[in-house]
Length: 172
Image 1: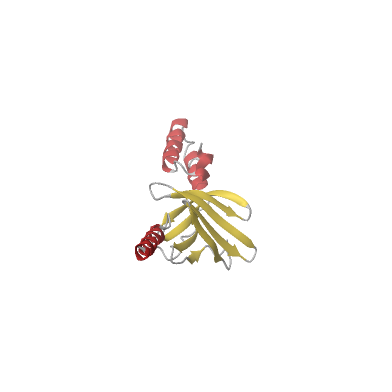
Image 2: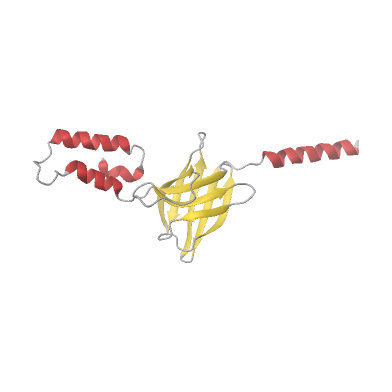
């Protein structure tokens, strides 16, 4: 009888241990949406260990991976630098996306954790929306001014292109 109980407890413990899994595993990029879809870091996440793969060096000089936790579907990732810590905190969604907040030097920005296979963060895209908006409004040099309907159509196209992106609020 004692052997059966010991075996049962061991079996239940093993089942609990194997069922503990991260809401998000594998390689992901932290995309911060302050002024564009800018990749700040790429991290490998999993219950067997975590690793910082790549960062935006001009923003996160000498960054190292700090604490990484996944508690009840809330993912926290800390990036430590000599001038302080920056962090991502997000909630895992049902479709595999992780939307959250990236705190960069004390300021909070909308951010996402997105699956990737890349080894290096992409070049910064900040300012892209503003450039496209100015191009939609201003006439081409040497051309007559754009008509209001033409400007409205161009702005509607930008609104559709950047739908759901917080940094694109200028277009509205």
